[in-house]
Amino acid sequence: MTNSLASRISEFLSFYTPFSELSAEDLYAISLSVNVLTIDKNETIFKIGDKLHDRFYVVASGLMHISLISDAEENLIDKPAVGEVFGLRPFFAKNNYATNAKAIQDSIIFAIPVFAFKPFIANNTKILDFLLQNFASSSSDSTENLGLGFTNEGGKTYETQSEIQFFQSLEYNKSPLLVHSEETVQEVAQKMSDSLVGSALIHESNLPIGIVTDVDLRSKIATGRFTITALVKKIMSSPVITVPENTSLAEAQLLMLQNNVTHLCVTSDGTDKTGIVGVISQQDLIFAQASNPGVLIKEIKRAPNAIALHKIRIKFEDFIQNSIQKKIPLSHINTIAGEVNNALIKRAIDLTILELGSAPVRFSWFSIGSQGRKEQLLFTDQNSFLVYEDVAAENNLMVKEYFLRLAKKVIAILEVVGYNATTLPYLASNPDWCKSYTEWVNQFNLWMNFPGEKSNVIATLFFDYELAFGAIEIEEQLNEVVFKNLENAKKFYAYLGAETLKKPAPFTFFKQFNVEEEGAHKNLFDIKNRAILPLVDAARLLTMSHKIKGINNTFLRFKQLAMIEPKYADIYLNAAEAFMFFSKLRTKEGLKNNSTGQYILLEELSKSDREKLRSAFAPMKELEEVIKNKFQLTYFM
Image 1 (cartoon, rainbow, N blue to C red):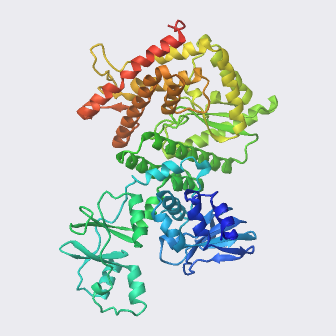
Image 2 (image 1 turned 180 degrees about the vertical axis):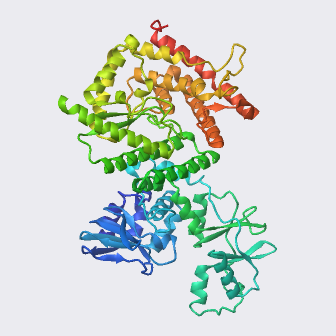
Image 3 (image 1 turned 90 degrees about the horizontal axis):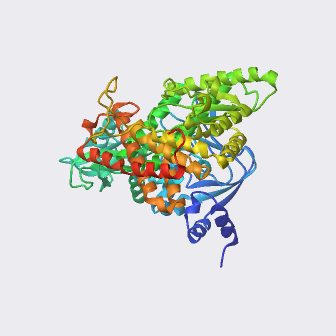
């Protein structure tokens, strides 16, 4: 007979991550063992130092506060609301609670036994990933960060981040403490203490035969089960769970949960028949998750200054490099990088408003160029413009002065973070690009209706705008202006088409790569202007001509074009792949040389990469023909 309470609990949980990953039958089975707790306002579920419970918790109604003590003050680090989980420490740690959990409203809490849920984690990486991110982000064990409760805003990047865990590499102790089986527990404990490590591997001729952890010392020695003079082989865990050197974060998570262990021994081939290379601890997994993009975004939101933001962005650069090495699709990395870059811009604006005081009217900050297209992986240029609401003429100067001061401070913060603001004039701190809504309407009308007239040079990157901060209504109104102008825009399209075809050629007359002939970049190939930007411009022009809304990213623009125009589908799909190849090559070059990656020494490329680079230009000639034919380029030619 069906249990009606379990059915209601199961139905409730099915709407929330990570429970939505489970089947209805599995959810019902779990719900049969759930306890329903009624918690009064200000009542505490657990406190710092309490022994771990055998369950974790889900908020069914009400609101909780999770806090910890730092510098003798209680600091709020998370606010689990309806449908959110908390109290995950029993899954990932053995020591006592490190945070307080208190109801700030009368609440109903579902208490889910760890033993009932654990089997489903070991078989579902998405669930495991979600829980570990939450634990890493709301734990005092996180590196340089005390609790940044992971919230997947809008569900934008959960799938991609989950997939990345299959590739994400781990930093672990490559010089583990090695001891012999005939040593006493006291001797081993002293060595662990001196080495500041939580484990010791017992070996014979560098082959692992067992492991002792600080948990063993507490559970087997401190309880009196064994004396400190006992041989370490009496308390070691054996056999040791071994893994190869290239074990990913997800694989390590699964193995620890499946085998109920807190350490893995790394060996040359992943078996106990080859030499010890290192040891992976549960703490290593937590530290790895602390560099996860979802956690970093939460860390960004709490950063107190520009220097802290710079450190977070450096951590994310390591993530980008590891992701590329692990062959994660660049489209996935771009998506996540776009969210991280937006979070950095938002925090820079938040910090500035805290300093200057509230804005006099609503405004919107737009990223343009590679930031606006969510294609910026390196520390390259920042480009932006600012739109503020219309005000009475007599107040415009005062309002504009406020926003110019705000823009200058924001851009200065982002320069400290690492984004260059000196090479291009397209910045919100420039009075030309910090204007009222009506002034911006006039600007876009002028660009689109009178292109090329009266020295009206169009900065095409302004049509790759992305709202980074502020009133979404301003963005929507600006979209209406742009798309209304596209209704009768033959001259505008022709102008953009002509500009697209003016980009410098990648090859000489003799089919050799065109390299810079003089200056600081002599003999280097400009992959940005000769390869990437022609594709960026072509994708923008073609999607605008189809009045496609909501897609700025070049790769996605070509993908969308392939669906809309089947007769050119092959050209567009090849262009999309070429763009990703060029972008990846530039990113790898930039990471290697700590540069923008714009200029490449072709001689340093492998023969294979040089051939791939040459081949990648093939669809560009076909793309040029499409543009010439579609827009009948007689204007400006």
